Image 1 (cartoon, rainbow, N blue to C red):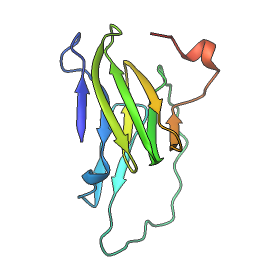
Image 2 (cartoon, rainbow, N blue to C red; image 1 turned 90 degrees about the vertical axis):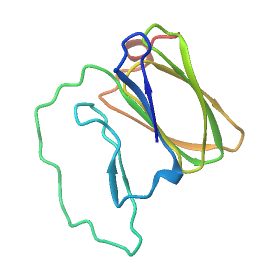
Image 3 (tube, rainbow, N blue to C red; image 1 turned 135 degrees about the vertical axis):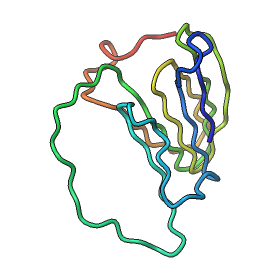
Amino acid sequence: MEKIYSEVRPGELLHVVHFRSDFTKERFDFSPEKEFIQATSLYSKTGRVVSAHKHLLQKKTTTITQEAIVVISGCLNVKYYDLDHKLIKKITLNEGDCTLTFRGGHEFEISPETRIYEFKTGPYFGKEKDKEDL
């Protein structure tokens, strides 16, 4: 796993990359507890059952859109940006890798025949209200 911190605000976590090879623990929460988007990796060597459950309604307010990308197949080149819009890191993601953006910016170059899942906190009111080009 790689954590990418702000250079403008040292200690502020902007992005996390969880690689396919990081699946070594039965359960690993790789989002800090305070973040709106939460991600966990689960690994079962011998099989397991996650008991039937539902999540309780809670009054929560999100103040920022956070995003997760999972590469299903293919390759994704990602550029990560700091709070001041400066490029701070480039990483290539492959099948099974996942990236989270809590703050800062990112840019994706999606290779041909690549499949990804994208998840973000909602509600989503469209590009005009949600995104700023860098």
